[in-house]
Image: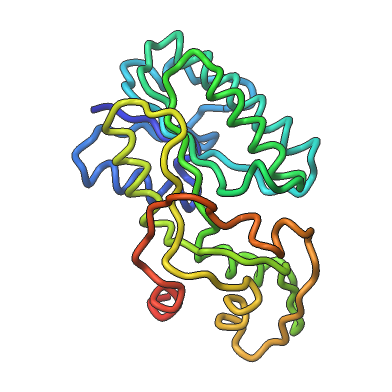
Length: 237
């Protein structure tokens, strides 16, 4: 099967590309560094020629509602239109557990992306996942100095490698619409995860809204449970 991975040079995208190749698939990496611009559509038609399925893990790092909506609307519209022209048969989208319960700017953009994909011309599979283990390390790196700030939130952190494997598995099958969510094996606070990695630095908590603090980004129904715990991931770094 010929797969294209949008955002294939990001840290999640690289794992998806690696997993797809391990499974024997031909993989096209869609990225700006490879001459394809999701925001303008430049290079998409050539990149998607002969592609059977697209896995979209393209991302933007922002807390701004305007920037998030602009990015996810534009890249999704461009990608779906190019897929339709190329005859792509399946669109697999990575999203976030609780995206419809949290009103932060980034989540609003992801919610809009889901709406476009589900209403679009290409049969879609939508996978919502919880925060990756790596998110705690990213939060530590964002704030320089000896004092770190953790959002007051509960999460079921999941290994990015398990997310990549699930995305590829879904891409190998028929479109399912919104599918069963994927979450990690244990509920943890973001502060506890960051303290595990902080190497003695002080970690303070700050509120980021009631939804996150009260479990708004935890799965509420049936979900697939990852196997790799945060401690196992941290010990292997």
